[in-house]
Image (cartoon, rainbow, N blue to C red):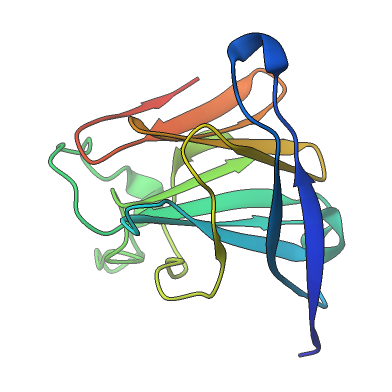
Length: 155
């Protein structure tokens, strides 16, 4: 895989009191952006449309004090084995599926990425993620998720 460094302008809503910051991170040949929360507890990736034709966001939290809902049937193989041990700690957002817990695949902890400082946002391929003391919120239009150590929400 070819790796190149890019600089993205982190989009911010001035009316919301957010800062605009330059986020320099690592972009891969599949046009994705990686970042982490200042605490290092949450790590995210925005995969651009070039990655799979639609693009999506995936975030993983390391330490959390909330109880995720029961794993849905789609998160099990036919033999009853869970599809992934990441359920409840990996969040996803896409235009087709909306926001929710990810049932499969791996997480994003350990992937290299710039720190997205509190009060800053990054926008890439229509997705916007904002870092705040109370967690990270990622959105695409009216679909979003927010994750923090103590709670989460989907809309």
